[in-house]
Length: 86
Image (cartoon, rainbow, N blue to C red):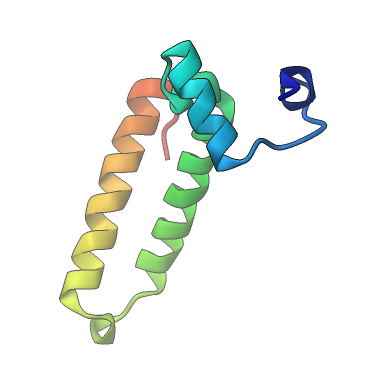
């Protein structure tokens, strides 16, 4: 395992390697890869907002409610943790 290749972005670590990092360093993945984690959260929020705005009554109340809940949770987390306002 050559950590410098992962640190420099030359290679992307496998899921197993990521879990190894978490075990070895005792730090959650979202803390080890904070920037990547934030980007993924923002991408999910954007996609959920798009899906919500494109949904119709035919989409089903359960799906719409799940999307609303997800977007509210992620928007609040982004504002609280990263100072973003979506």
